[in-house]
Amino acid sequence: MNREWVFDVIKPCTILKYGIVFCILLILFSPCSFADENAGTNVTIILTNDRHSHLEPFTKGGELSGGIAPFAAIVPTLEKDAGSSLLLSSGDITSGILYKEFGGKPELTCYSLIGYDAAVPGNQEFTYGETLYADSLQYADFPVVCSNLKTADENLADQLQESLIIEKGGISYGLFGFVPPNLHYLANISNKTIVSADVETIAEKTVSDLRGQGADIVILLSHMGVDKDRSLAANVSGIDLIAGGHDHYLINETVQGPDDWTTIIIQDGCYGEYLGLLAFQYTGNGMVNYTFNRLTVNGTGDEDPAIAKIVSDTQADYQSLMQEPYGETSVDIDTRKSTVRREEANSGNLISDAYRAASPGALIGFVQGGGIRGDTIYDKGPLLLADIYEMQPYENELFEIRLSGADLKQTFEISGAGIATENEDPKQGALLQVSGLKVTYDMARHPFMAEYDENGDLISIMNKGDRVTELLVLTDTGYQPIQEDSLYQLVTSAFLVNGGNGYFTLKKAASDWKYDVGITDTEALAEYISKNSPVSPKTQGRIIVNNRVN
Image 1 (tube, one colour):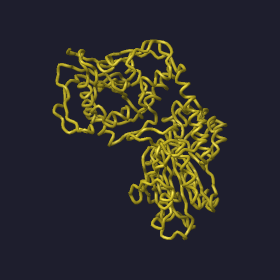
Image 2 (tube, helix red, strand yellow):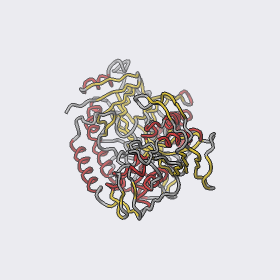
Image 3 (cartoon, rainbow, N blue to C red):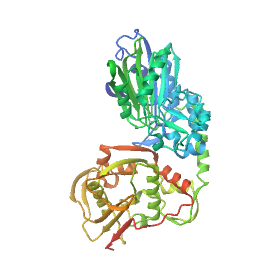
Image 4 (cartoon, rainbow, N blue to C red):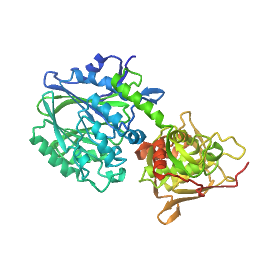
């Protein structure tokens, strides 16, 4: 097979496509990148972050991207001609059902065989608590650094380092790491573990210690998110590079700190779709003439055979797992189109409740009826993992966004316009099934009407609609009317956040602020059913449809 690599050279901003190794190396180490190639050591730092257990290639834009076996085939070529190189992970290597069921063995075994030099944990590593993460580290043949976490879990504490020095190619790299300061909020950790938010003080001391131990270049592996990384770089000198994660962004920037110190901050997206390549020269006085390149891995490219076998074996085991009971329901679960696209459905309540449970920051959760599949009634009794995948097959990432009360009402006008009548074939699936809300529609009133272009983007609104007669949000004191000028944080799927089914309000809100929950809709439902079995979802008057016409 041919290997196709795509470089997005972020400095300067150019996209180049090459199918041969020579051109890649020419980009990384040509005189156009460095003023004097004899002035120092050519260094390559390879960064990945937020893989989230994505071992197989996945489809994006109609093409296969990512995959850890194609990734593994690329790494030796990129490292070969560098005078010194590091391969680093900024966290969230593992997540979801695969991590829970296989204990991190396939992911961390692959990372070890590929030859990672160091990693920091992210929040996803702690989704199932300290014990699972500590046990998973037996498969990690590379150091894990974490400087702002202290734990009384001896197994975990023994496997984490506050900082370390790595010597490669005649250069001493000092590394330390930070998990999110709000880890208790994001993950399932006990009171045995304490996470410090005073990262500036820790960073100042750690940088000083690493420089005192002879570190030529100091690197922070951060899973705090770019906003906290920027703040840290602006207030602490001595950090050459912050290799970040958590946001799933593509980041390449510099921040000026105290004493005119400049820190580079990078991220390379998520799910193994990209490699982040930082190339520079080390001359004995810091990092000179750096260039950050983003490489997209063709999912149909050459594969490392050992890694490919691990992935294949894992997927075979996973398919066997699909046929095993994953939970239980004490009631029938209705996923029929004729229900979920016309009215409140107990499956809709189950799924939207699962979204909210996976996203503690959200008051509201919803899923469109068209996103609930299966089109059947699941009898009470055991639920297979395959059943869960049948209900939520698309594996959409969940996102938190914030909407004003006015935009939330407009969102439900779009929902109300998508309610199928009794005699209609329920092809459209825009009706929102909800959690944390109650909504009443009057079908005798005007529906929302708008014009969209071929990409689904809003052109104009002909009628804003007035079918929503009551919209209530669940609070500590019960259900209360939505306030138009208040902001409400909600969780839903990437499909809706991207404006699917005409939800321009959600797309606009996401352009202002969104937070990737780090779990798919499928994983959220599976986790909810597993934790709360037997589940017994029922209709509760969350959606009321008056004056329905035939």
